[in-house]
Length: 106
Image (cartoon, rainbow, N blue to C red; front, top):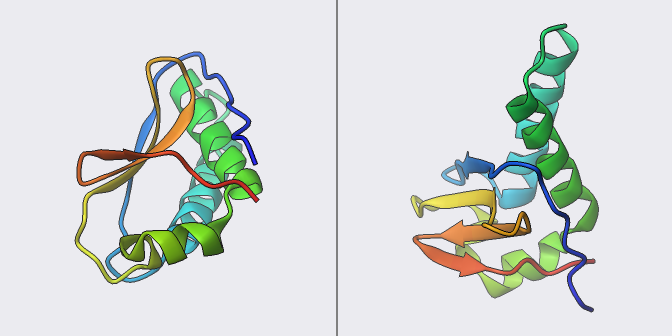
């Protein structure tokens, strides 16, 4: 399946802590935290909105079982540097220890 790219207005990078859980759990956790922050703050900035959209699109589109199977580090229990981000063109990508991973979609 070809990846449906989403274009974002600004570059966004969200570090993911996969030391104790998988990428799916971490993205859900960050989405819920960011949503709570946005709902509790009437003066939300563009960066918070972009982060929320990036996390939402990842949750809706990524094939998490395939990602965890292909990249063991994404299953959790790792100290690898992992981030969810947008590239220069505004597309969603994953960076793991400096290597860009094009996400698998469900």
